[in-house]
Structures are given as structure tokens and as C-alpha cells.
Image (cartoon, rainbow over all chains, first blue to last red; front, top):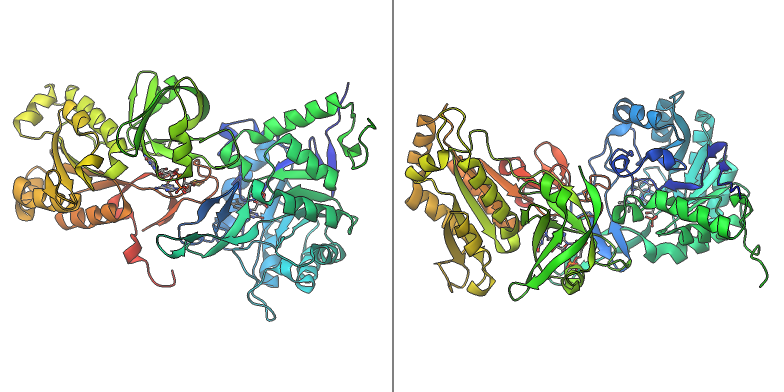
Length: 311
Length: 302
Ligand SMILES: Cc1cc2nc3c(=O)[nH]c(=O)nc-3n(C[C@H](O)[C@H](O)[C@H](O)COP(=O)(O)OP(=O)(O)OC[C@H]3O[C@@H](n4cnc5c(N)ncnc54)[C@H](O)[C@@H]3O)c2cc1C
Ligand SMILES: Cc1cc2nc3c(=O)[nH]c(=O)nc-3n(C[C@H](O)[C@H](O)[C@H](O)COP(=O)(O)O)c2cc1C
Ligand code: FES
């Protein structure tokens, strides 16, 4: 039987629905030692900023039950170095490359996106408006993420939309009371797709030292521990917007990935799992294929809740 | 090159109160590793504990790799439960190991190990021994004889809380090293910290700072110099850095930091250096001591 794993999200043609999650795959080089990166549905880069960023003081990561906290602080080489040193490698892989970007002010966002104008090999831009380690600097709310404020979300997406022709994916934070409000604001601002979820804010305390574990005190929780939260939010958002969703949060296996697709995601991203098994993405893709064959599903896009055979 | 291997455990046994030694079959890792490099192990096949755990390569023997570890938490407790015959998921070899300086066959070496920090030092001692037993290309002598005659045996300083926690004394002696011990409670050897022992050995046993500097300038151009190699708790390494700076002796230290990926992809294991952040897993774990910005040197607000 022929199985079709191809998906098309916001005009990005992917030969399968599995990509890496931003910040967990760097710019691909390290993982290229473990498998042929051509196998990826798409590659999402580490978030880059206009100027290079040093990141936070160590310790930056800490393991928690079935998960981990991180406070990397968006350490990255900045857009100029990215284009010079990373883009040539990415371009050569021959798969859709999604460049994740973040800014602290509206001007920074637009300046950054302008730098990417016309760059060959980029298929889409992901707006990381949800990094818990970077706060927005605008008159109104200095200490929140863009994605914690519907108006700020709308504004940044609209501004960037006017600046670039690349498809825009907007990445949302779970650290909100109602994620559908933010998702709708992103859609209204002109987003072509939504990716969710970024990490869940958390904290760890060291009893012996009577101090927070992370130097930044709080960090973002990822891994299997957040999967139920992520599934719930994908489900909620899929019922609230029309644009396609990229689901993520704790995906370790093909089964996890398929659950996200049933909850309403058109594609999925794998993050923390790469750290445990650098070959996990091609393995997930193979397993999805097997599942489809076994269940006689010819097209992955027809996988929807309520489509199970009646037993 | 780094790869993932499913390795058969050949032995996993207790060697002290909380210390274990695991030997597993990994021909490729054994072939390619150098002292100071590490492997990244999965504790179990389940998702909890989730992350891999880094361990220095303690020794290797043709197709076998050995790690020496202390049980301190959930991950190491799980690893200690694994039995011979089982399979362990190992990523490696990772990181940059110790660098034996060019002409190292003639140079002095002092190895300082605190607690479980002995783990990579045993392999280093063996590596230095091998270098010394090789013929010197310039003077075409078997160099170990020369160095022996100069009284230049590899000196190892081991620090432990108590005599009970002292590890690997025998292994070092087997490699022909001169071993000195410091215990905090004085139950064996010098009473105090191993860094105090280092200072003492640099001032009294070896040469006072002036004479040492003298000796170095005398031999400048030739290859005989001292290199200090250290692995242990951060406070110890920081002290080693200060002492070696005072005596102007190059030192290499092996650092630890919490890790996720182990391959330089997550930026989780950063360490502050004079040239910005570096990654312990990829640029280290071994660094030149004078390159590190130690915690007490952090600028407020940086
Ligand atoms: C390069 C390198 C080489 C090492 N070599 C050895 C060795 O040869 N023998 C040995 O016994 N130990 C070694 N360690 C330390 C060892 O990795 C930790 O003791 C171990 O990860 C603790 O796991 P746990 O689950 O038992 O402890 P927990 O405290 O429960 O671990 C919680 C989390 O913190 C991390 N963590 C805790 N302590 C350390 C530490 N000191 N360094 C890095 N991560 C830590 C764990 O990996 C885990 O993610 C090395 C560490 C590094 C970075
Ligand atoms: C170490 C680490 C770094 C991350 N860096 C970024 C980043 O730079 N940009 C971003 O949009 N998300 C970042 N994330 C979030 C992930 O992309 C993902 O949204 C989240 O981890 C949930 O997925 P997971 O459970 O599969 O990891 C990071 C996550 C981790 C664990
Ligand atoms: S552990 Fe991921 S970069 Fe070092």
C-alpha cells in the first residue's frame, strides 16, 4: 500500500510531518553526525536575535521528573553570523528550513526579519514570541512575553507580516490563562500557522544549599512531563482558529506524535527527546509510517479524531 | 567519531561504600578515546530519569571501557542496579580530553584528584606513561629512563574526605606514579585538603616558587616543564587554578556542569571563560585553568 506522509503547512511542503523543535537541535550540524538530516520533515533553527546573545549564567538546566528545566537565555550568534556561518550548511541539506527569530521590541523584530529578506533556502519564519528567558521591552508591559498579551501578539505579528513575504509561524506560550485568545490574535495579525507549546514556566529548589537550582531562578519545563498540557492546548486552539497547527511538548515516540495529530495538529515538532536519543526523529517517522500501513490509512492528513474503525 | 552504542555490561560492581565500577564492551569507543573524554549513559530505558548521565572514561582495555562512579542521586542509583549481561545505551566518546604537551615525554606531570575526580586521572596516568615509554624522537632515548633519573616520576595527589573514600591508589602505583594522599579527617596521609598538599609539595618537596621559575627559564627552549592536571569538585579546581597561577605553572582542569545533549546542541552546559561562554560537553570538559572565569570572579550584573 502507498502511504502518503506529505503535509503542506502554510505553503511549506514537507515530505513528512515531523520536524525538530527550535533550540533543541541547534543548527543541525551536531545531529547530522547521527542521521541523514534529509529525513527531517523540516528543520527549525535555534532562535536567533538581531545581536548575538550570551545567554544566562550557569547552571542552566536541571532534570525534573520526566522532564527538564532550562534557562539558556537564547544564547545565539546573532543574525549576521547566522547568515554567514550557518545558512550555507542548512541550505545544502535540501529540506524546508524554518528560521526561528525573537526580538525584544517591535523595531527589533522588523529589523531582524528584514535581514532575512530574499535569503535563499529559508522556507518560513517562526516568531518565538514565547521564550520564557526573554522578555518584551515595550512601553506597556516590560516583564511579560509578547505571547502573554493578545494585543502585543497581534501587533508584532501584523508588523512582521508587513515586513516579509515568508510564511509566518507564530509560536505560543502555555503560560497564559486562555491560549485561544492569543491564538486568535496571532491569526488576526496574519499568521499562516501556529506552533505550540513553548516551555511551561517552572522552578527547582536545592534543599541542601537552600537556594534555587537555576541561576536564573525560574526556567522552562519541557519533556514528557508537559505532554498532557500541550495536547490540551493543541486541542483548544485547533477548535478556535482555522490556520494549521504544529504541535509539540513531550513527544518521545510515534505514538505521542500521532496523539498530537489527532488532537488537531497538522505537523509535530520533537524537542527534548533529541537530547536522549539523537536519532529519535527518523525513528518516529519510520514508526508513523508503520502505523499508517498497519491501520490502512493512505494519507496522514486524513488522521482525525473519531476516524477509528468501529470495533 | 561520536556514536551511540548498545553495549553489553561485563561487570558492574561495588568498589567502596558508594562507589561502583562498570565495565562494558565498546570496541570503537575504546579505540578512539583519550584521557579526559567522557561517555553519556542512559540510566534505564524509561523516561524517568529522563536525561543521560555523563561519566569520564576511567580506563580502557582494547575493546572494553570502564567507568568509575559515585551513587549520588536517582540516575546513578539506577545505573548501579544494572547487572552484567544487560545492555547499556552509551553515547561517546565525547568532549576534548587532556592535552599532554608536545615533548611531554620529558616534562613533569602532577595529577590532582579530589573524590570521584580520580576517575579520568587513572587513564591519564596510563597515557602519560605510554608517552614516556615511547622513544624520544630528538634524543632517540627511551625517555622513561631519563625522566626517572631526573626524579621526574608522575606525581599523583589524591584527596578524599576519609580513608574509606580513597580510591585508585593502587592503580596509580601500578602505572609507576608517586602517590601522595590527603584526607580531610587525617585518617590517612596528610590531614587537610589536597590543594594544601599541592602547595606544600610545590614549596617544600619540589622547589620554592623562585627556584621553580628559575628552573623553567633555565630549561626554556628545551621541553622539560611541569604541567598540572586536575579533576574534582569545583572549589578544589578553583584553588588549583589560583595556586598554579601563583607559581606560573600551566594547569588543565576537568569541569562538570549539568548536561542534556552532551554534543553541543542545547547550550545547557555553558561555563564562563575569558573568551565568553564555552560548552563543557564540546569545548571541554578539560580547559586550561587560566581560561576559566571562576564563580568568585563573576562581575555583578554580568
Ligand atoms: C564531564 C563529566 C564527567 C563526569 N565523570 C564522572 C565520573 O567519572 N564519575 C562520577 O561518579 N561522576 C562523574 N560525573 C558526575 C556525574 O555525571 C553525576 O554524578 C551524575 O550525573 C549524577 O546523577 P544522579 O541522577 O545520580 O544525581 P542527581 O543529583 O539526582 O542528578 C540530577 C541531575 O543533575 C545532574 N548532575 C548532578 N550532579 C552532577 C555533576 N556533578 N555533574 C554533572 N551533572 C550532574 C544529573 O546528570 C541529572 O541531570 C561527571 C560529570 C561530567 C559533566
Ligand atoms: C534546552 C532548550 C532550549 C530551547 N530553546 C528554544 C528556542 O531557542 N526557541 C524556541 O522557540 N523554543 C525553544 N525551546 C522550546 C522547544 O522548542 C519546545 O517548544 C519545548 O521544549 C517543548 O517541546 P519538548 O517537550 O519536545 O522539548 C527550547 C527547549 C529546550 C529544552
Ligand atoms: S550538554 Fe548540550 S550543549 Fe553541552
